Length: 460
Ligand code: ZN
Image (cartoon, rainbow, N blue to C red; front, side, top):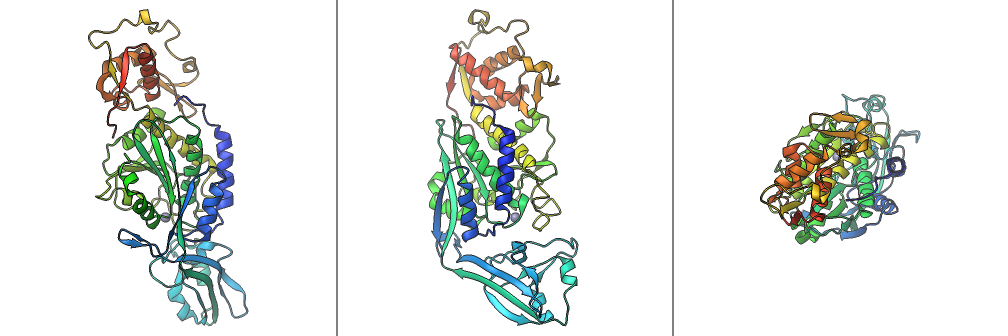
């Protein structure tokens, strides 16, 4: 990919704007909040929307009725709202059925959810497939409830046949390899899980759309589980042809970067991420594959077996504010989100550069000097080397998140050495410690002089 560097400051401003505008919307696995979110994202970059009707069968699952909420609250006998959906939409258990009534404290309590260990946080709860209603509140709010009070409860919601909405876009490439970039968009006002992933997915689509791509990328944005299954059931052939991919989730917290590996653990999806962290000299936590998680659960099932990984920053399950009202816009930042976006883009760049070459001069080293390939003194290393942090042991440098260059003659010799028609550049980078970007540039230069030819090889 010979492309200009993204304008990171502009992307950060754009991420911040999207986070602020989307955070208040009441999303769910169906409904108008989901549609409004997808339509707002489409103002940033276009993708298709598909509506799947309630009752549609998606393998072992059925698309539920569509859920929409106008209002919901618990009021005291004077009509004062104690718990108000309009103040924070996670106060209402997501997918609560319509209800209106006056209840005693004892009658109300079975419908309330709190977190005694995090008493100032509202928990996030759902009841997609169990038809009931409930409210979530802080434990501090709960302890202030008057046990002698009569509570007026209203859940002004509809749960009726409608549709589940998902979005997708295909960015075409030439290699014959196609990768998945997926995220889930069903969580309401929760920032890291997963508004951050939704915004990152959108900016990544917007960014890659302007590049000349070698591989194809299938972008899917859907409600978690049922939305992914709805997509797969309507596009099974296309999903089967995928070589693997990433699920973007929990990407903007203040904590450490993490990587949840694919079920295979050693696919190009995993190796591209590990190389990215290694080349940047960045510390991260590696989480082994687990059957708990996000939509990689669906893509990894026996009938599909796609290797799907996740780069995150404060991974779901791991941070104390997970699935609570404290996972809000104060917890995350647009800057963190864009730092993780850089990692995804660098990992994808590695998938783009993972070409395999065959030497057309396979016996004996080719004479570089007569082709102008033998670097002149002072020209062997890019000029930025002098001012950047030198990773001397590997011979390459990192500056402001961009992997730079090592000694070009080394890169030329290693690429020539491994041009046996069987060794992709990702393996060359792993074996030599040289930056993949440089190996790719050198290989293209050698191919242009007729010393190498590219061969098509399975890269997964
Ligand atoms: Zn979640």
